Image 1 (cartoon, rainbow, N blue to C red):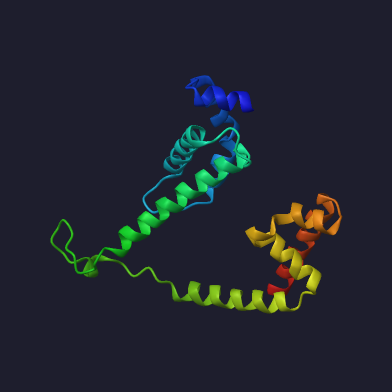
Image 2 (cartoon, one colour; image 1 turned 90 degrees about the vertical axis):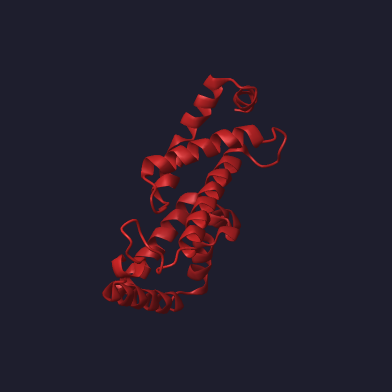
Length: 184
């Protein structure tokens, strides 16, 4: 892969295309998990592809960080930047501004707050917290490894516990099913 990266950094279009194709599953998965108001899935994929191209240019071949991790971080950082920009843009809007027809936005903006959905979400959150309290320490530890980035995920959990990844994965699935049982 190092040779392909070097060729891509030198401007080889085929090498760049090869790298983009190699990361296409990550691009699709990441773009499907991101929502930015006003952007279609295809727009987000294009942003991710540009992120890959920028990562190729900026990646230092001798870096201790692997290229795949660098690309993933570049894509996520660009999405976060885009989301922050959209949030800032929305923050700067005033409902007293007038639209193209001369009406104040406050009179034309529909109320999209769903009280029922809010209450349901709040109740589910409460049930989840209560369910987590019922878990033993080992199960709680697995949750930290699964949900907290700093802990390293299932692979790190398996390594720390001296078990196979498959065993850790099964434990995670049974834990999630157990939590679902408590919540439902």
